[in-house]
Amino acid sequence: MPKGAVYKALNESIDAAARDGRIDKERQAAIIAGARKVARVMDDPEWPNVGGRFDNVSPSTLLKYCDALGIVPPPAGKPKADGGVDRLRASVKVLRAASGG
Image (cartoon, rainbow, N blue to C red; front, top):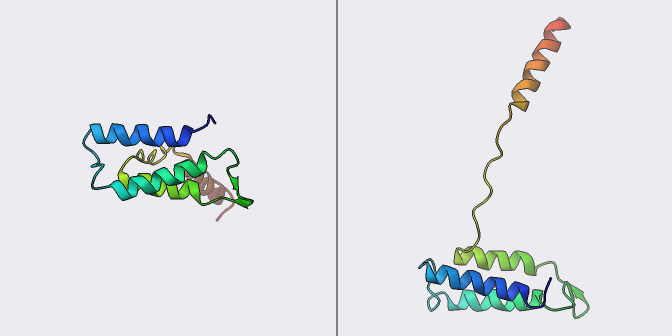
């Protein structure tokens, strides 16, 4: 990942959300500052082993800040049903009927 990529992407998302009126940079300044701090940690060349310690907390923390700012895309949604479960149930019924059960 290029140096500063997380911080840059975060700021681009914040700026876009502010332009769209989805966030207020002044009212949400503390959340933005926290997110930026975490982004800088993740941009450290030694990350995820910063200062001799493995950092497995920063990614989820950054996502929580982004969620609080409303700049996380919605979940992909419920997977489309392909009828697999219904076909399996029908097969089980056929097998039970064939075996006398």
